[in-house]
Length: 383
Length: 210
Image (cartoon, rainbow over all chains, first blue to last red; front, side):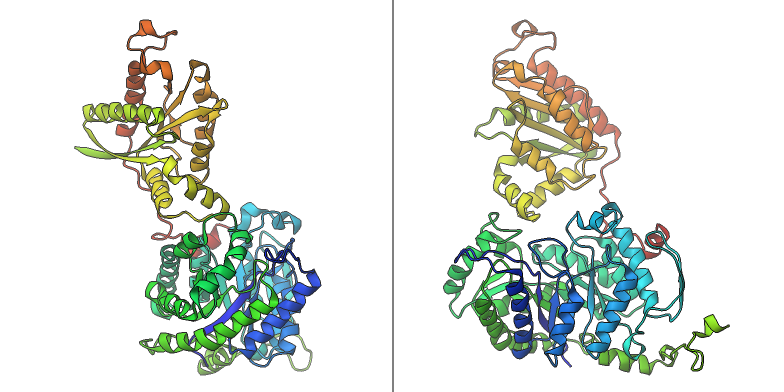
């Protein structure tokens, strides 16, 4: 069981390769995503996470379909999201989809809640973007109950009320999937993660480390405030972005056209400015190790580090080579360096097995199935 | 003596710049007027020209590089703002607008602001009232009634007889604007921007607020 999980997260963009001028089809991009996920397992990474988007040029609109398909072809890698839209998805459907995925994967999954960053997605799904934070709060409060109470009566502001509702399937082993809350700049979401004792993921790939530090500190302080443990026992994840070649100059030369034309930051700051201001590291594996081994100096010992490796039109072959370097040369060293000096009371990265074991240690948390053996009804409904 | 912070945002493009020249005159007059009210002023100048590349990068990526971050914090923290732009195509310059485009929502709300503009001819003088004032109304800033416009010729005119209208010579208009700004800044409690990271809204309150 690793102390820290290292993995990759994909945005799933279909982007023209600026070097060849070639644009992959959606079919190619989807199949490439599967190949990347499987290779991530082969090179010894711990996590594959997919984004959720509902507009071109992105393909991953159906994360559980992708993750279940990958799960069927892998043995070990944990499957997750980056992020699941808690604002525009129906929390009832999230409860069902991801509980089903949890069973199919034997618990080899978790998920990260996010609000999304594309304005029109809200109206496309019948929601109001000005209610973004409130949707995240109410929807997750319902999702949290649906996975913990067998029969739910519920009424809120944003969806139709529920009477005597049971989300099926019930969570595997009576233990809900682990949840991360991803937020870049909303203190409310750090507060939410702290309140529930869930994980907090700061996707810092466009942000200076000082900002990341501020958000993580807030989450840790509030995690302790809400009684889930000491601040350094809070569950923290970070984003990252790297491009490597054995020779640092080769990495810079090869990646520059992809950087210069990338969605979001292309045609903006220079690669040198961007690497100075954000965690993007373009260079040798050793440079990547040095940069990422220092992250904990800013945020404390943490549990999950995800890298963005497959965007901006990078060809599949290149991405697979990058994974070879990440899994072969970088992560083993980072594991060793970050294990050194890590206090024993800092929790390991969360897994289903560990959470089941922890639930077993606490008798009050034993999850008896609250269903009458004869009638199949919950005791509450049968009363 | 009490202290207040004045942020001076000047978006001239040339060096030396007549926009900066006007900004400096407005600043000196405001500091003097504040002094007369028993308030010591700490002046922080944001020369937008120096942030031009970072501004474009921030518009494209959302990421505020070092100098720009500091400038945005300066403006958000200020007790009063002096904002001066050259007039381009009948309005504030694009660079000036870009700077205020990337300020945090609410960062200028309630902050007293003295507006100034420069141009080659007096025919641009309404740019302050027709372009700048609506921008700062959107930002919910408190603009003082006098806006100070300086055409190139104003830098030569020293008496009301030398200017073509009833508004007075440039130095008189500078003094009037400075008095108005100083009175508002002095009357106001020092600015203390809320820090959502230091004092988050508790989750119980967020739940109750649904």
